[in-house]
Image 1 (cartoon, rainbow, N blue to C red):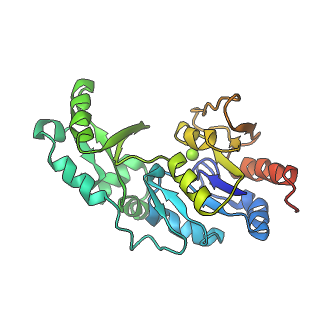
Image 2: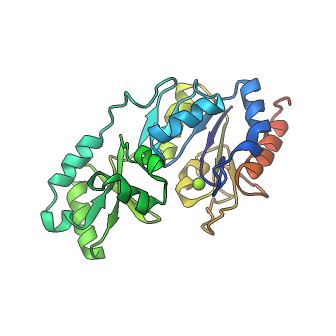
Length: 255
Ligand SMILES: [Mg+2]
C-alpha cells in the first residue's frame, strides 16, 4: 500500500496550515510502514521541511504540481531541475508576447508575496523553483495562444490554475505517482485531494479520498473510473484523518 496526498486544504488546514487533527492516522501509517508521498504545487524548498517534520523523509515527494520529484533524503538544495531551461525558452519568445507574461523569475520577492498572498519568508521559498514557472498573464487570449504556441515548439506545456499560468516540460502528479508506485513496488494506491489539480492523481488511484473544497471548487472524480471514490465528511486534516483511518481499517491495517 502507498498513500499520495495533496497538502493545502487536504492534509493541511486551508487557512491555518495546521495538520494536528491528522496525527492519529499519520502515526498509524508510520507504525505500519506505509509510505506517505506528499504531492503539491509547492516547491521542494517549501515541502522538504514538512516531510521531515511529519517523519516521512524515507519517501519521495512530488513538488511543483507534478513537474518534479524530490528523492528520499534529498534536501531540495541540490536539485538541478530544468528551471533555467524554462527561463531560456521564455527569452526566445517574441518580445511583444513575452512582456505579457510576468513569471516568478521576473518578480522581486515582495511582488511574489503580493501575488501569492504569502508572507515574505514563505514567498522566498515559493520563489525557489526547480521545475516550473508560474506567472501572471496580462495579454489577450489570442496573444496567450500565440505565446503558448511558441513555447510548445520548445517542448513546454502550460496549465491554468487560479491566478497563475504555470509553464513546465510536462509531467503531472499522476505521472509521478505511477513512477513512484512502480519504484517502491507497491500494488495498492490511495490518493487524497480536494481540488481540480488533484483530479488526475485521484483518478489514477485504487482508492480516491475526495475532501470538501473550502474555496468552493470541488473536484469531480467519476465513480465509474478505475478508482473507488470515497468522500470525506469533513474538510482538511480532520476529514483526512477520519476518512483515511476508516479505509486503513477496512483494508486490514491494524490500529
Ligand atoms: Mg489542495
